[in-house]
Amino acid sequence: MAHQSELIAEDIHAYLKAQEEKSLLRFITCGSVDDGKSTLIGRLLWDSKMIFEDQLAALEADSKRVGTQGEKIDYALLLDGLQAEREQGITIDVAYRFFSTDKRKFIVADTPGHEQYTRNMVTGASTAQVAVILIDARKGVLTQTRRHSYLVSLVGIRNIVLAINKMDLVDYNHDRFETIRKEYELFAQGLGFEQVTAIPISALEGDNILTRSARTPWYQGPTLMEHLETVQITDDADQRPFRMRVQWVNRPNLDFRGFCGTIASGTIRPGDTVAVASSGKTSTVARIVTMNGDLPEAVAGQAVTLTLNDEIDISRGDLLAPPETRPQVADQFQARLVWLHEEALLPGRSYLLKAGATSVPAQVSEITFKVNVNTLQHEPGKTLALNEVGVCNLSVDKPIPFDAYRDNRATGNFILIDRLSNATVGAGMIDAPLERATDGHWQTLDVDKKAHAALKGQQPRVLWFTGLPGAGKSTLANLVEKKLHSLGRHTCILDGDNLRHGINRDLGYSDADQVEHIRRVAEVAKLFVDAGQIVLASVVSPFRSERAVAREILEPGEFIEIYVNTPLQLCEERDTRGVFKKARAGELKNVAGIDAAYEAPENPEIVVDGAAHSPEELALQVVGQIFGDQSAIEWHI
Image (cartoon, rainbow, N blue to C red; front, side, top):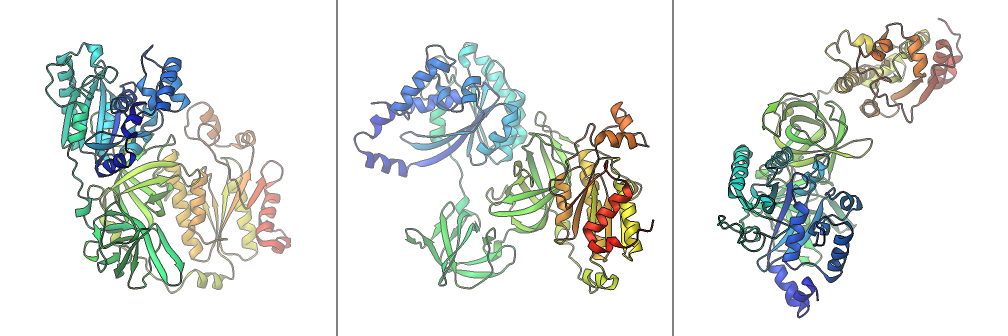
């Protein structure tokens, strides 16, 4: 029999019963690369006898084949399951493992130490209660140690184990241990940790893991396992106000309508009054339904279905709460944001914000400051790169309910998703609503877009001309407007270069400024559409996501994307201002097609070939495709 089999061979039912009654601790191991995180967890699994026979046989074979410890068992291989991890001897993905002792159950997340995989570390830390931060005794406190420490404090972990590993490689030197401990505690003073317990260990040799090591007679504290078994974690989720996000509206028949979700905090009983956070509508709980029957009470962590005594409007994503302690509801708020994507954050770009089952378009309107993870100092910045952390102001398209993250982790967090690739690009923790979010309201006007359009006898819309600089967008837009004017249409041109002399004169050509430039053009175009005008917007608009947002703020059919497809070589030949020549010489930066990207439209309404036809012919093509037979009217230019 192998380790784990011996524990359950005699009485499986007694074993399962004992496991059920133990408390559960979730913890994370983190730190810099090669600090021994996977080896430590592998050692814990080995020493706690949580390895099955087949795992043991595979571990012994893998240790000989790809292990890093010679003839010895390589405990890290229990965690490093990906082929790339084993080949490189590193952790890439988050590995979760369960083990238990006589006193407690544990779920441990082994997270990667490489900087490029910091986003995976944030994922593992999001549900942890304790963080075991490993430090290589030879190297001391490193940049990644500081970064991970800041991130675990950011996600709300307050209990830290400072595991100073590889003490065998510094001859179990007491002075070295104390130097690292003092340096780390000095750095961590401003992180809000409630407890930092430093333990000298050797994960490979087993020193101070389960039993006290005779090699460190100068250390009188607990072993790592003793500390994990006895550390007190304050879990007051049941004492906080009731919160439940509706994940599904269950309507199996005409006689039943239930609201399914996992209780984030608080308790709920039949007869309790609940309110929909966003609308304020209230009702009382009729039943608490589960697959095992109705409950007299439900607490945080339980998945339940609530039925109410009144028919009120509740949809997926709504947050239920007591009416007297409703969460904040706002469309603008401040949050701490960890950026998780190689493509930098661009303020003003539209992302998808997902909080629980709620998804809503959102923008980072301002980066208040970035946090230097080495010094914890605040630094100015216009964007966030991969793994950077900043305090940002965000705005969403409609008000959403939330609590401050410090008050409720479950209802105060969110992720940002790229709307084109669906990649998760950011993870955020909400601090507070912005005061201006509740100050204004949308003024209703009697003379609306329909009335303006009827007076002018036309359908308002935006003709959005996009293409490389020098593609002929402005020339084409000008000719199309002249044609429409001759047909009696009411038009307006928004030329990107002209706007930079006025409303956009404060913007440059960086990616962030391009995003804001396009946003302003789109918003101005919408105002003209609301006035019944046909708008011709001639802007490079290099990003698909921003053109998509320009389309979305208008009604279906009002946005017509016209791609002026002109080869770069021809654009350069037409360049009368010397833009491309300066860009080629390195004198001008952020020129689309040279040192900045241009994302060609994937499904534009109209594509014109800027090299195959004259501008006059292209203008006739555009008018003909949009207005049909009207293009047959004599051409007057």
